[in-house]
Image 1 (cartoon, protein in one colour):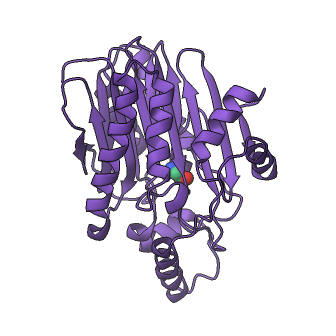
Image 2 (image 1 turned 60 degrees about the vertical axis):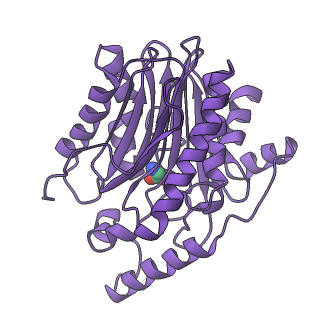
Amino acid sequence: MKPQRPTLVIHGGAGEWRLERREKGIAGVNRAAKLGFNILKGGGNALDAVESAVMSMEDNEVFNAGIGSSLTFTRSVEMEASIMDGKTLSAGAVGLIADVKNPVHLARIVMENTDHVFIVGRGAAKLAAAFNLKRQDPHTDLREKYWRELKEKIERSELSYLQKLSKLLRTNQNLLSLDTVGGIAVDKKGNVAAATSTGGLSLKIPGRIGDSPLIGCGNYADNEAGACSATGIGEIAIRLVLAKSACDQMRRGHTPQEAAANSIKEVNRRIKNTANQMGLIAIDPRGRIGAAHNSPHMCWAYMTPTTSSPKTFFKAETLKRPPSS
Ligand code: GLY
C-alpha cells in the first residue's frame, strides 16, 4: 500500500472471534473507522480521530471496552484506557473505571487537564464527575453469559480460585475476551496519535491492571517514530513493553508491517506458554501501516484518502504460536 496521509487504523481486538459476533464486529470497526477518518479528512488532528474512533467502539456492545466490557472474577467491571499525542508525547490514562461511559475521553481529560499521566479508581471517578462525564452501567447480557460459561468451566476443572493465568487459559482459551479496542492515526500534518481502551481480561482478579492504560505497553505514539496499539493478554505486552518496542523499530527504519510482525515474533520467541495471544497495529508518520497477531483472529480496519470506505478484516499477518513448553 502506498503511504498516504491522513490514514487511520483501528482494531476491535485480537482473540477468538466467535461466529455469533463477527458480523457485528466488522460493522463496528467499519463505523468507527469512518467516524475517525472523517475527522482527518476534514483537516482534524490525529488525536481527535483516534479518540472518536475508540469512543465509537466503547459505545458498541460487541467490543470488550466501554458498554461491552468483560467482567472480573467477582462480576464487577473495571475498565481502562489511554491516549497519547505523538507531537508532544503528552499522555493520559485511567484504570479501575466502573461506570464512566467513555474511559478514553476521561484519559484525554487526564492528559489535558491534570499534571498526571495515570489516575485510577476513586480519583478517576471524581475527575469524571468534575467534568460531568456521562455514566452508564456497563454490564451486558452477552458478558454475563460469557462470565457464567467460563466460571462453570473453571468449577468443573475444580479450580477453586484463579491461581495462574496460564493455567486457566490452557483449558478455557477460546472463552477469554481479549478484544480490547484501539486506534492509531496520522493526520495531514504528519502528527501521529494512539488510543486504546478495554474492559480487560475476563475473570481477571479485581484490581488487575493490563497493558491498555500503560503507556509504552498497550499504547504509544511519537512523531519521530510512529504509533502502535496492542491487543491480547496484557501481561505479555507489559513484560515486553510491546507498543514502545514496536515504535522504536520504526524509529530505526523498519516499516510498520515489519515492526508489528517482529514484535509478535518476539512474543512467540520469548513467552513460550499458551497465554501469549497478542495483536498489534502500527502506523508511521508517512502513513504506512502494519498489523500482525498470533491469535486466531484480529478484527481491524483502516482507511486512507484512496479507500472510499474502510477496509475491514478478521486477520492480518498471522504468526503461528509455537507449541507451549
Ligand atoms: N489487552 C487488554 C488486557 O489484557 O487487559
